[in-house]
Amino acid sequence: MRLTGVSPESGWTGLAVRTTLPNPSTCPGLRLPGRVTLTAGPDDVPVRHVRLGLVTQVEPDDPGAPRKLVQFHQVPIAGAFVVPANRRRAVDFALPLPWETPVTIFGGVPLMSLRMGLRTEVSIDVDLEQGAMVPVFVHPLPTQRHVLAALDTLGFTMRQAGLVQGRLPGVEQTLPLHQRLGWWVGPLYAGPITELEVIFVANAAGLEVILWADRRLALAGVTHQSISRFRVWHTGADQADWVAVVDGWLRQAINRHADMASDAHWSARITESAHVSRHPDEPVRPGYGLGGTAGGAGIGGGSGDGT
Image (cartoon, rainbow, N blue to C red; front, side, top):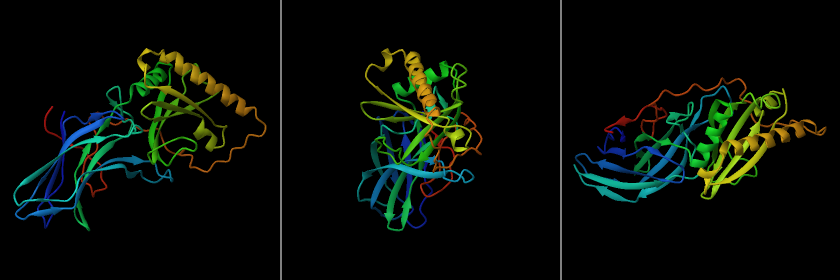
């Protein structure tokens, strides 16, 4: 499937920007190939630079406020050049995706309301920038896919998927945001904990998996919360018994949660918003993605021009 994002022509330059992705599906750590085509009008158009950026929506601090559109990764692909009048200039690229890029697709289905887009920024003048937006579908790494599949096998039901701006204390991160996947606990593990949030932080060597038990309920003052961290390597991921691995993690996390409950010195000093008033996300219908222009705040669909 090929997706293309097209910008409206600039009023005084007549420049049109077209971004094409031969395959908008990718994974963290891979390169996303594509082409930016700039078409000039009746006059030469001097271009200062061309940049690509990954854009997504993050949760606001106020649960009643709308989500914010954030560009979290940007790469320059061309410096200064001139597009001659009535001519085209093509810039090919292979955008490297960070290992921590949030996952938006699992099993061929969008993860709840998560969306991501590739924004092209063409700087013509200090005060004038043009661009086009095209959807990007990020599939999980093998280690991430195995963890998600194991949770499903163990009876967990995904409740919510979101992106939170900011870094996790004590966790080595390169991006200014992180992904949280909320689950209702499977029947086998219900009782000691009610909800589980899973956070993935990947790098070239492996994956850190953070299990956050009952965070929302603790913020509401109902119970306490606990955090457990585990590490796996990408090498040999397909040979592991992932149901047994994840089951072992869950049992360790539940034991840690119980130990914290029995600690007489436990205190629930919380500084972040609970988001308890927000309902679980509704899954996005298949085929729905990001689109629009670089300067616009809206999110719509990209255009397909072939399969």
